[in-house]
Image 1 (spheres, rainbow, N blue to C red):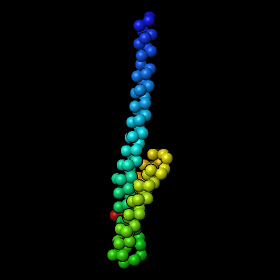
Image 2 (image 1 turned 30 degrees about the vertical axis):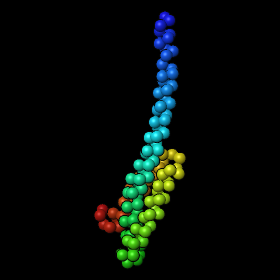
Image 3 (image 1 turned 180 degrees about the vertical axis):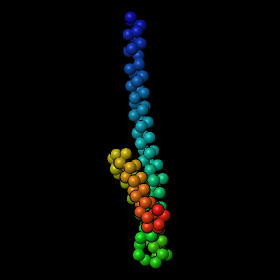
Image 4 (image 1 turned 60 degrees about the vertical axis):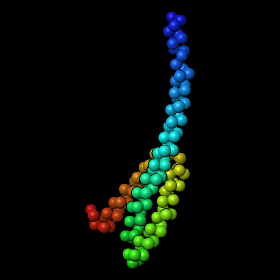
Length: 114
């Protein structure tokens, strides 16, 4: 009886340390996920935004491309800031991915791809 009680008392500190390690790892994974959506998602968001902006702006094609490429620096910076500003990581992922999809659908409708 005494041996079984000692075995039940032993894992508590081990589980406590494991739980602390998992909390630390989940925080680092969340930060890594934010960097990933900021860098990769920001790149795709900016690319689709630049394509859509150059197709929509009512100026000559060369000027529209120059304007949209100039605006791409601002767009990319805003997406990067947004990905760290919003508290919920799920909201960041969903909003960026849905806005990329919506812009891509709109661009494909304007270009006649669909």
